[in-house]
Amino acid sequence: MTKATTGAADHHTGIWPVMLTPFTEKLEVDWFSLESLIDWYLGSGVHGLFANCQSSEMFFLGDAESRKLTRFVVDYVDGRVPVVASGHTGSAPSHQAEQLQAVAECGVDSVIMISNRLAAQDQSDSVFLENLSALTEKLPTNVGLGVYECPYPYKRLLSDEAVSWAAKSDRFTFLKDTCCNIDILARRAELAAGTRLHIANANAQTFLQSLKAGCHGYSGVMANFHPALYVWLFENWQKEPEKAETLSNYLSLAALTESMSYPACAKDYQKVIGNFSTMKCRSLPTGGYFDNHFSSTVAQMISLGDWLNETLQLGLRPSGQASATRVAAE
Image (tube, rainbow, N blue to C red; front, side):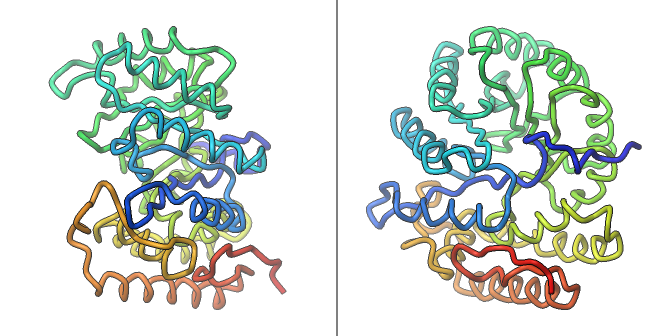
């Protein structure tokens, strides 16, 4: 296994939160809360943002609304970090091309395709690769491309052949990996080595191992709770390996909170710390199975993370603050 180039200046490395979409009580996009969320991400030191993804509830946005959301994020970020985005929800190839071309026109760094949109669940990898190639040809060459192994409506993992094709194409910059398997992650890192393609692991439990194997960062839901801890781990795992192992163990267990009616649990947390006005979700119109004890569990998770930050002397501000900002260790 090769070591990750975490010190490189390449802007496709690092921590890339999968952005939430705040809604008002009437389930309209809450633009003011979205600004607060972006400020909070950036204040935590993240290296990029993944807008208009499943966490953004993209399957519950119309095309015009999807474009407006992406454009808003790009404009508000204003180049402070790179932004990638998807909005790739259509079924017909022509509709998919229109959606992705519209996202490209929003000024994103890379346009992200959803892997399960490129072949039905019962179709072969050859069909997937054929459709991936055809869609790639329809998209502008002045923007990077990526693939997200989105688990909804079904998870389609890329074959080694598909990863290799994307890496060699010189068009692809970003793979949001959801395989949750360190052997596959290591193999993909080798296939992408020396190319523009970067592997962003969505799985907290294999994150540190994947960095050691040559992957390039994290793009997962837990960056909606304590992104600064992931930033620290990414930037310091080689310099302070013992602290990194301890922090990784905590993050692995903390990530189990994802099962508590996400994204409602994340929106509830964002409401508690003052970034959101509601925890409303279009994907969970009745609140799903969200219960008050979830709020308590998240609060305890955050408190333990803050204790670990202090104990390990990581030099971070407490996570439970709106627009949290990193500070230098004393």
